Image 1 (spheres, rainbow, N blue to C red):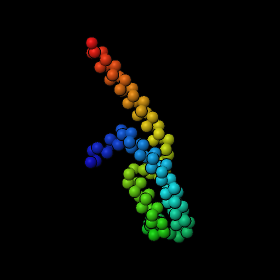
Image 2: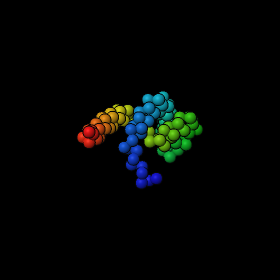
Image 3: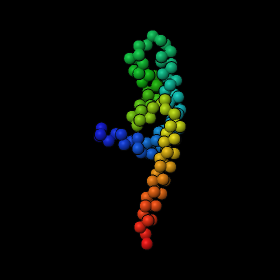
Length: 109
């Protein structure tokens, strides 16, 4: 639902999936960008027809990049912001667990 979409920013799996997708499918993104350059190199093709022409010229790359975009992975992302967030979550959850254990240890006889 629309009201819960913000929760993805609080989930380490989102950032892990982004890093995995960027490293695993970098060849697909490169192929997509090469196809985009070939199609737009003509200069006579209107911007509205570039996507249609790309889907005819290299349909596999267009479909795969569209699938990545639907998962929230943009081909212009870098891996280091996602890695940084994973490190922040790791440290944050560890500190939270130490705090909870400290609080609970005060009541043990």
